[in-house]
Each structure stands twice: as structure tokens, then as C-alpha cells.
Amino acid sequence: MPRAQKKVKSPPKVLSPNQQLQRLARKWIRRLNLTTFNKIQVSYAPKSEMEESLGHAYWTPEYKTAVIKILNPDDPEEDEQDVERTLVHELLHIMLQGHRIMDEVTKVYDPIFEAALNVLADVLVDG
Image (cartoon, rainbow, N blue to C red; front, side):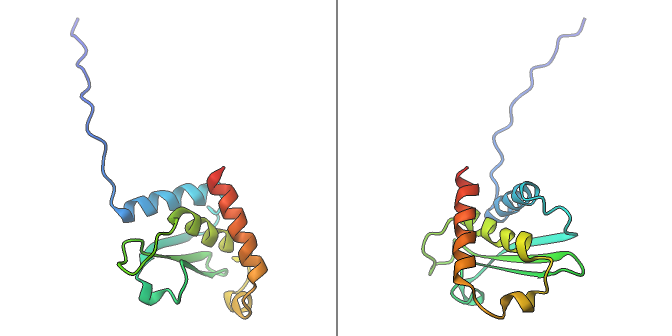
């Protein structure tokens, strides 16, 4: 009988920051059951595109698509941020408001709603 060959473990794969972000996005899209969206694109953006924000979500309910931009943590002007919390916060916008036309949602800034999303993101990420 032939002997079984030992499997050689390959070294752990080092993921780029963008690959790490994509992995986090897939995890949270599944957890929040946002798989009904046709596409949710997630990427890093420089501070110059972020209007003093850590993240932005844009969506179109009629096509069930969304784009999330997260402030690039490698930006030299960036203070430390928790990318996962920011991502979950933006996904919660899509989950709770993605059925509405974005212009209607963003007409007025709602600090209480934003604070509630922050609490939810903290609880979800921390478990």
C-alpha cells in the first residue's frame, strides 16, 4: 500500500489592506443579511474625498447597489480609526435606509440616528 504523503503547510497568506477590507465586507454583508443587494462595492478613499468623515455610503434602491468609501487608514493625515466599526456603521445605513431614495435620507443630518448607528456598530463588532 502506498504511504500517505505528509501535507506541507504553506505559510499564512499575507493580505493587502484592500483584501482585508474586502474580507471584512463579505463577512458583514452576510451577517447583516444584505445579500439581497445585487452589489455592494467597498473601497478605501483618501481624506480629500471624505468631507471630514470616516466613511460614506451611497445606494440606489431601484438597482439594489451600493458603494461604501472608507477613509484610508494609511493616509498620512489620518488619525487612527477602527475600519471594521466604520464599515459596519455604513452597512447599517444601507440595511436601515437602503430601501429609501438617498436624497430623501440625506437632506437633513440626524445626529441621534448617527449616534444610534455608532452604538449598534460598537455592539456588533465587540460581540
